[in-house]
Image (cartoon, rainbow, N blue to C red):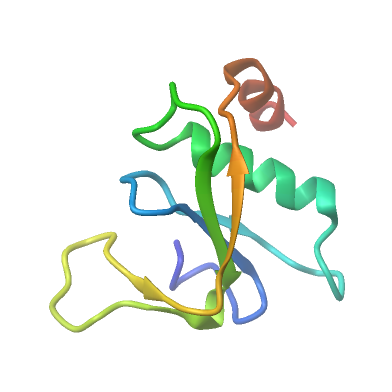
Length: 100
């Protein structure tokens, strides 16, 4: 998904140093809204191994800064130019976001 659906300015989210899903926020506006970023951060935290934690660190960067090293395992990437957000996963909120 990161390399097939996402484009350069789309935002990529993943929990920092914690296994979990990559989340892509497609950006059609000049800049993503704060509520869209908050939703993506929450989903990345919820779909990680830290689902039951609090203040889970989630890195965000533009897709153009995400690279897959040659020979790397599936899902492994390196990235730069990130901003770290913190979220406490909430199942009810995540389910509400997913049902939209």
